[in-house]
Image (cartoon, rainbow, N blue to C red):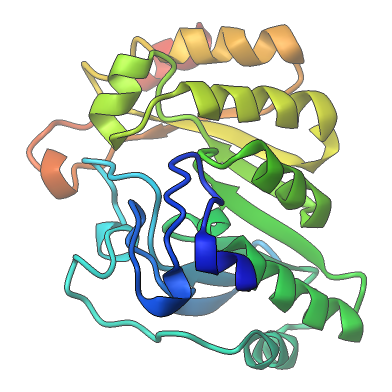
Length: 249
C-alpha cells in the first residue's frame, strides 16, 4: 500500500500521505473496516469500508461515508491477510464472491487488491464485487476492472450542477468512467443505478438512461426510491406513481 504515501486514487488527487495521518477530501487514513457480513441471498461475503470521496447530503450510510467526522466507532484497520482468512473461513459452500462496498471502496484499492491476492491464493475462483460512485481516476478504474467480476456503479446525477449540489463533486469524471466501463467491461457490470429524489434527481433519470442506452441498450439501469436521511431528512421520498412513471419512460 505504498502508494497511499501520495494518494491519487480518486479524481480529487489530493496527494496526501495517508499512512502518516494526512487527510484529503475523503478523510481516510489507513483503510478501515466498518463491518463484514455474509449475504446468503447474494452468495457473497461483503466488506463495508469507511470513508468516501463524496459528501452526499442524502447518504443513508453517512456514519460510514463521513468517517471519522461522524464520530462513530467501527472495527478499524485489519491486516489484508487476516481479513482474507476470515472471509475464507466464513464463506458458505455456495458463496462465490467477496464484495467491497462503503463508503467508497475504490479509495482503498491497494488494500482491496492485497485482500483479493490473498484470497485467490486459497481459491482463484472466488469472484470480486465492487460498488462504486465512479469518481476514481482512469488508472484506478483500470485496476478495478482488472480485479472485478461484478461492478455496481451509481450515477448520482447527469448535470454537473445537480451532481455537485448533491455530492460536492462534478459529474464529468463519473460519466467518463461509466462510459469506459460500459464500453470495455460490459460483462462485469452488475447494474448502474440512481436514487430518485423528488424535485432534484427525477429530471436526471431520462438523461442518464439515454446516456447509457446510447452506449449499449442492454445495460441494466435501476432506479432506487430516495429514503429521507442525513441533511435531506425532511425531504419527501418519491411516490409509487413517480417511480412507475420514470420506469415507463
